[in-house]
Length: 465
Image (cartoon, rainbow, N blue to C red; front, top):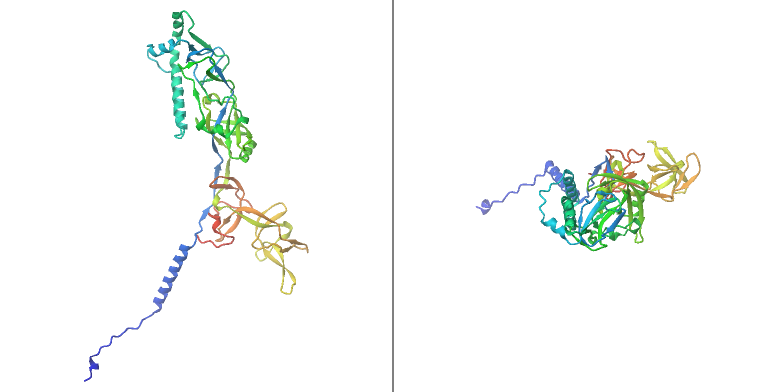
């Protein structure tokens, strides 16, 4: 018998392609392509327009200018103050004494004057001083700590000095001579015990260097300090009218404030508000300064040279949109009499002059949306018309060459699924948002959807969020 009977051949099953497998494969390939395309495509993010407001408030650190007079010491010796800083002294009030021998200083340090208690007014003064320091403390300006220390020490010592004032006469009597000289105020005013070289400054003297606190030096006039004759003893602010000078970014900001004439100011030290009259000055270096003049509250800030303030300007209300959605676009400008309505939809358009292959002229109605208008002209889309086109005045043979252009500020509205430019009128703008007019003829309405980043789309692009 043949050996072929023992030979086994493996049977291969034929590939069974049915319609279900083909459909599944096609769907799988489609999904892969869609995922790949999605990952490679820049995604358009929409933004829902809402009503809102932006307050054009600005915070500045200003320099306080007052009518200040430095009063020199009439004698040499150790000074002891009896008038409280920040209070008004009248002509003839005792301000300080000059101890020529130092005996009064020894008495203050060694005498047992019993328990000293502070009145409610004294405690209120100290609390106000501490609270003011805490509210404006800046770690970068640590020298303020030393100023605060000297201020508190001076306040406490002046309060304590009232308890030993009655013993001054006894010391003079014991020495049979006037070793301790009484110094009285020759003028009335608000008294302070510090000098800094800014006393005679005015708006016209201002430079940017005056605002650099790194170089600012304030000399405190403290109790028991040895004074030479003619040294500064104290300082008087003799006029309730005073001002704060701030440095602003540019002349446009200064002009805006000057136009207001009076601006409401919030003092960050105590949150009080007051209205200041506005003046501006630009020095030779191009630095722009604004002076806010006040007729009250000088005594509250009489010890402060640098004051943090907030300008409470008018709050603008309207539609709030992000700055990233704003774009500038060019348009053709044509006279209003050349725009008409026509077509099946009855929309606005122009009668465009066209030519066939043989050069014969004819007129065609072309729909052109209107994006803005003036009293005599319309802004029309430059995607429809082209420079050099002629349009015909309705019911006339007059022609107008399309050439004049102008730009509009606006956003891309995507309510209909494609990028449609809408003109906006900006009322106020900061670094992130803008407030625009609502319910304008060619602008936005509340709840409209716009493109968040206008640089990602072009006119009439279909939007896939």
